[in-house]
Length: 189
Image (cartoon, rainbow, N blue to C red; front, side, top):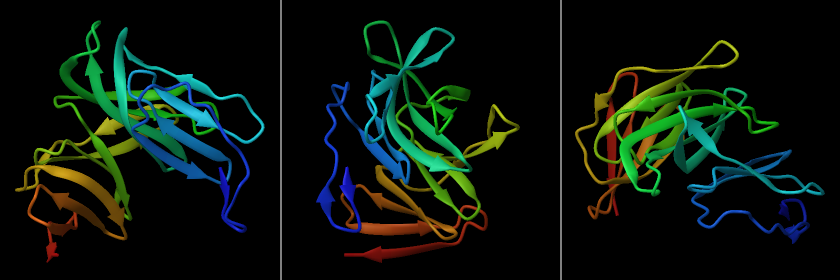
């Protein structure tokens, strides 16, 4: 971990993960998405532990993590016993202090990425589908029906203010979308 005030490394961690795929941090530590190993929690002075994501006994390969609405959120692909994609995805809500799964929703597509805007939490699969994800009560997760984005090969998503921002394929374009109104903005570089 790096102290932002001094830019000095203050902690080193050995991750119990073969394939780290994403990271999110707050003042308490960091969470690392770790594919089939689940999600690892890094806290200075504490041992590193990983929590696997299971849905009805089936493993999930965690591809993205995000802190929003007071929870840790993880998304990814459901896998079969051999570790291959089962053709579905998931969004899981976890305790941001323990990593315990609080709720989970299965979606019809794998490879989900997460972003947050002023209007909530969003998941996309990279093939033009967008889902709004909501916390329900203390332990629930609700996913609103999908919307088609009108773009394919989305390989990066980021939320800022009221917009979701996407890098799309090899077009060298950054596209912004207000997921509530549908307004768009595009920048080429």
